[in-house]
Length: 482
Image (tube, rainbow, N blue to C red):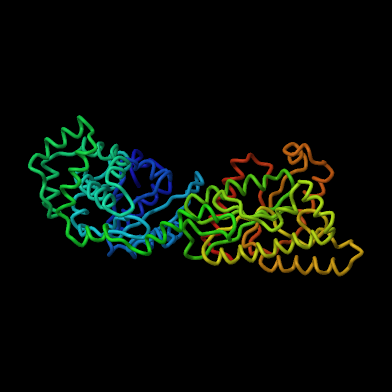
């Protein structure tokens, strides 16, 4: 067991540290250690460096701690780098392990440089006194940071002054802990030459915090790098240019196309997750918060399957075919009146198409959050058929056909929110109590066709409900039920 003072951060991080030690895995948190506590509380990435020969043992730890492997989009994917996502049961926080098996420095849009100093790096580790995590000695971390800044600043996508300014506080923090003699030893280990006036440079930088002096110091080491590293950062790439302008222009046409995957996908496959319940059960609030929580790292899209179906992808509402018909404007109401019962057919047909799209994205590793879900057991409410009492039997039959199409591509997991009519009415006082009672009762009886239906007591305080949903959702990822 770890000492009590070495348990800062999420419990999952404490368990991870202990498991890596017990497995005798060579590892370190290799960069950004100024923000190590933020990493261990899930606020930023955990930047892990693992020796390649320990990869299999590390993957066993990932499986034991129920981490899921993810894959970045092509423009931010690099060799010898993996993404692992974990879930902290106590807080409901996601933890992202940005796992390196080599000293790879990303420049921009799929381009990278490889530093050939893995063994030397592991020979210059120390233990962080606060967290107990192995980290590089300040002199080694400083050298790597200076080289990273020059490598990135010399790429075609960035400016030297920009990247140095962004990391100036981290640079100064490392300089305060740096000994000129130990820095010279690190330079020798890496095959680099240290400036003769290193001690004076450190003192001057700490006193004046001069940006040009920082650039000059990093440039001194950069000039000694092999040509292969410098060429990797400076050459243009058609692929990187494509990614650059694709992402820059995406915001202009994004509302008019299908959702675009911008975050990581789950390698083992995504899921379609639906939330159903009476008015006042908290469906929309939960959908919003779960979408925000997952979108932190996982490609996640919100599908609203109510009276006005639409898709929201990364805070952008996509254009829907029914927007003009389902609104409250005079034109929308007129269109609905003119179409009559055909309006309900158009709506359920669109929902069926959206669910097919949801399945397509989940098969590629994305997560789809569905606010509401069609069902055909209860007519007239709770997203059920509305034309079954119509005198036009052909329309009624066509409606059932579209409902069956929608149900063929139903959700993988359905969270059924049970709320008492009294609590629901307190939350939605503008709704009729009798209608709420009827909806609350019918939700219990509906038999959804999903692989997993999870019943949630939505009367409980919201924070408890949210945490229970997160725990159940991550459990569904672990079991990978489809």
